[in-house]
Amino acid sequence: MKKLEGKVAIITGSSRGIGKEIAIRLAQSGAKVVINYSHSREKAEEVINQIQQQGGEATAIQADISQVEQIQQLVTASVEQYGQLDILVSNAGVEHFGKLEEITPQDFERVFSVNVAGQLFATQAATPYLRSGGRIVLTSSVSARIAVFYHTLYAASKAAVSAMVLNLAPELGERGITINAIAPGGTATDMAQENAKFYTHPALQNVSADAVLKSMTSLQRLAQPQEIAATVAFLVSDDASYITGSTLAVNGGMF
Image (cartoon, rainbow, N blue to C red):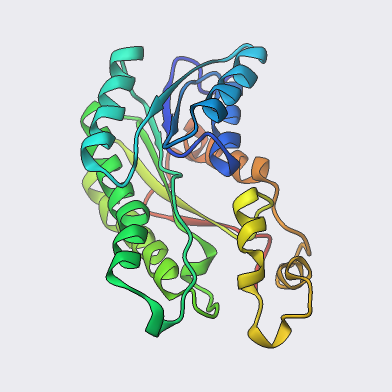
């Protein structure tokens, strides 16, 4: 079913990982999608080719989400390309692990400029173009509610996202726009593979990181990126018209 037929969606950080699968899923649902990338035009083009092979429509626009001016240019260029904007999915983010005494002001700026400021200003830039029925989905994380060694800076940035959607909901609700966040748990992406070892307790360094993560979920496995994308597709559809201000856990029953 083409539930998003006639809609235009921007997905930040969508040349790889979860963002890529979100873009593909929304295109399959009928939306015209804007693939945002920071560095790799080649990977963005691969996503476009995949979407086009399935009969969808997409374009790629470069923008560094840590730079407010580039966020504004991304939104403006998207509207110029397609004449409208209906959906913003703010997926771009950066990871960080570090002991308290090792965190620097530069670390704070790098993480919060993308994970918090980038999502806030993407929302700000997109909102003037959204009509009643517009949808915004930001990206929080299971890390906002569980403790992981040396993950303080990242977790704090993701907790801020959940607070953001909760407080923006009544403001945007006056215009008929919903805003929610997803909070994924462990997901089988290249970024997760790079960082999985950091999620284990220091005393469990000889145990597979994948095994530890799987042992913490009711479904006893990592999520597939397509499963996260399916949740986003629901939140941006008419089926989720009465959901706003919420952070939806997509974590396999993590405990």
